[in-house]
Length: 150
Image 1 (tube, rainbow, N blue to C red):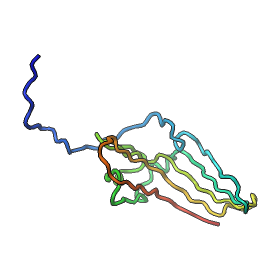
Image 2 (image 1 turned 60 degrees about the horizontal axis):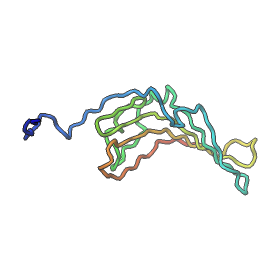
Image 3 (image 1 turned 60 degrees about the vertical axis):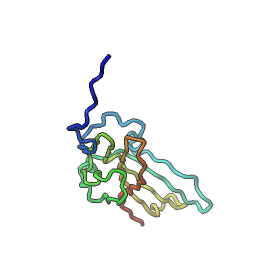
């Protein structure tokens, strides 16, 4: 068997990456995407307070919203992800940017169940993935949030 001589150069740029829009047909085991308004609560502490989290898939409205609330971080795992619109997912050969994975409300409850919550914080989730394990880079992804209290 004879193999051709190796190429000394190639027309393929090994560094250039083109982000392409992708569609997820099966959300898999992601609780925020599969559970409609699923709520989980902590045990009640000595003062009768309780902390609950309610997760849900991204609504059509959340998917349409502009990603202005997403803050780019200087050492972001997937730097180009912050500029992509919500409701769409993108990937290239080595990275993935999943927008509008879902959202969650963090609910602070008092001992009196008839009282309104002490506070509610809403978080919108995105997921950024490196698809190759041999490159190490620090990653911080800050969720956007809104909060209110009574």
